[in-house]
Length: 118
Length: 205
View 1 (cartoon, each protein chain N blue to C red):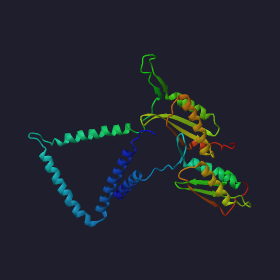
View 2: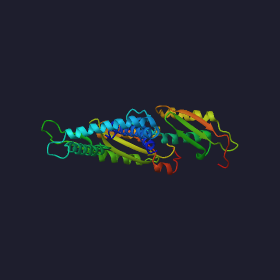
View 3: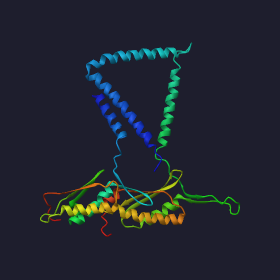
View 4: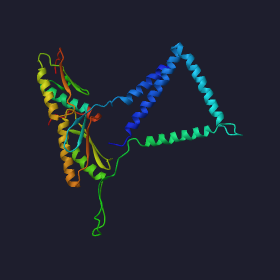
């Protein structure tokens, strides 16, 4: 039992050494400076854009930005449909404008059930 | 940007992991694989005999113990010193000089000009903190490829476009270039801190 624990700790250390770092960062090209952006900052900017495009409250949008993907989850207000393609193109437009590298793939998911009273 | 020995750290971490994995595998094999115990016992016996032989070979006449112990102590001391050096090498590289110009070679006007890092850092930080879309900005100066370089850490409010902040900061840096008379390498790192997570969203832009 102890030896298995030892092996697990060793494996964890080895993977830490070999795998890339955990903090996901994107590069913004700039003529003057080297610019890196945390995925979290990018996610909050995209969330704002998605919220404007969908016309919902900030609490109804959740954005997760990974190494190569940007997942956008929208919970529409009950009775008011949300245009997924519109959200998608708005977010992609924002990403292109910011020209982050590598350009993440945008996936928009609209929740089947809406929320009331937002 | 700091001079942390990243490659060395990774190699040390990987080696530690490999050693632990090897020890764990051996232990597990001894416990659960019956065929492994026999050869293991034979080889450890052989190794014990070898070590005994070396110990006897290195014991001087009239001494009770091998001089290898002294060598071992010295080696461990060396390891301890190297470990201290390794700890001290983490995260270094900040510098206090932003720009330095030696005086002219002829003796007309002796003297040199030094801009300390604080001057550039405070100027840039003050300009950045005037903006509403940033909760905080930290500017530091580092040694980078033989010269000074600026690292600008920006903490924007929620929902602020990183592109817009980059454009503004670049303008400020170009103004600083004009004032200082030199183009310093700059790293802009935009991250989210606790304050950007909990403060209100910037609504007007």
